[in-house]
Image 1 (cartoon, rainbow, N blue to C red):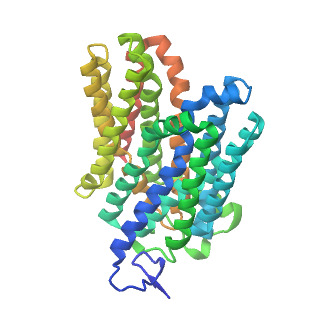
Image 2: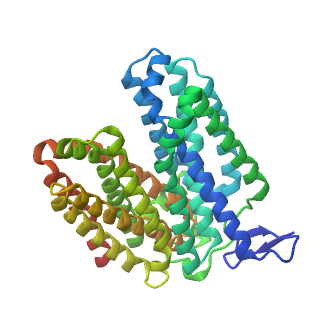
Image 3: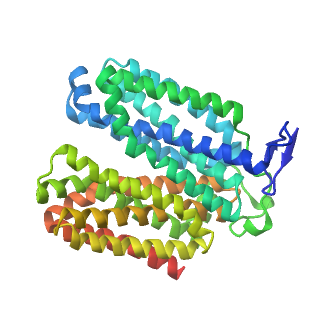
Length: 418
């Protein structure tokens, strides 16, 4: 039998009456967060092994680095492609085939004996992986309402944020003992576990009907078009929406700032303080650790303030913290670490706000909105090293961090105006 939630979701009726919907949803939340975190490990898990991979496959460093790039591009593009598919066909219906493809492609990566084969399987791995964060964020929006949605999205972002922090450490430990085949074998084994748990535990959560309060950006069913025209109408409503425009701008700005710091922090530390590789690695870890704390507390903040005000506040604080970092970085390592930690914390506060806003604003097009948001934030990540490579040689830390601060502050200003 199936029951319907206040969201109009079709959920299996619990056979055990003692299992409350809230506790069941909490278990689903942690499963979704763990699934997205494990799949996201594929982005950074084998990064420490790139030089070893180059030697074993007898190829160039450029082609080895390309294995990271094609995975990210595949993930980014498929967010936009699969968003409407998830909205029309269901969450679990798309998630399971995506996980199967990811498992198969990961095993293919493990068995690859040439760079050409590895590149091919990395593309398919990225396509399969793209389904998981898209469906996970969408299902969280389906399962939770109001303050619970904000707190759940914050918990999800915290779990997801563990991947970039732990990925290189886990990959280096496994790779030292078993090489790159062992790293991909670990990724395959954990993803098989997630596939089995998803098959057994996850319900289908696609809304059957949208509540009246969430129909601001919807068109009547009688005028809803199917096929390509309907998809473009959905995209148009997302971009024309004030909430959609602000969330997309904020996502690009936030992840551009984060990856600007991740990419250029080692350069700053080596140039100004002559730190070695091991010492440099502690500072990005500090940034990520504080961002996890911020993400966890973001839900509490959103339960006391409306999302738009939280976005304005956190974006403004982010710009302010970057200005502090700009002046503190050349002074001392202690000042640099303190302002870096502050920037990580306020970045973490801002992360869950954006998908929470989109989930609340769009119901029938929730997956499409999340997919567009993911695509835009990936663009922010990709743009950071390219923009920074022009700014840093031209103006050093002041120009690099100053532009990043201006971009994130502008997103806060836009949120306040809209």
